[in-house]
Length: 95
Ligand code: SF4
Image (cartoon, rainbow, N blue to C red):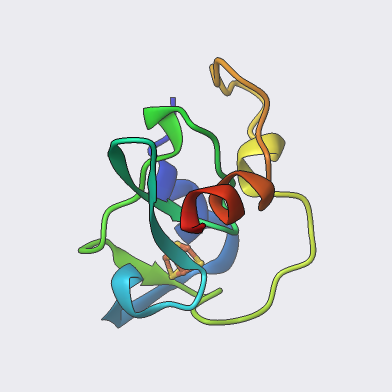
């Protein structure tokens, strides 16, 4: 299975010199007793399969608004155990 950040680099290109932690699409929040880090463009679930790393090199979607399907949904061989949810999950997490 393709690595999450590699899927983003393939799709949007790689932005050397920038890190995901500085991107407006990088979401960090608490959900129950866990701290979650997600990429809103890739897609967000409660699963670790969508966890994101601050240190990853940014993609070309860095701090840009995105209205398409979350990338996780487009990966045909995804083994995601729960359906992707582009947005609602982290809105809950940030409350
Ligand atoms: S959209 Fe932002 S957080 Fe997501 S991979 Fe690209 S740079 Fe990283």
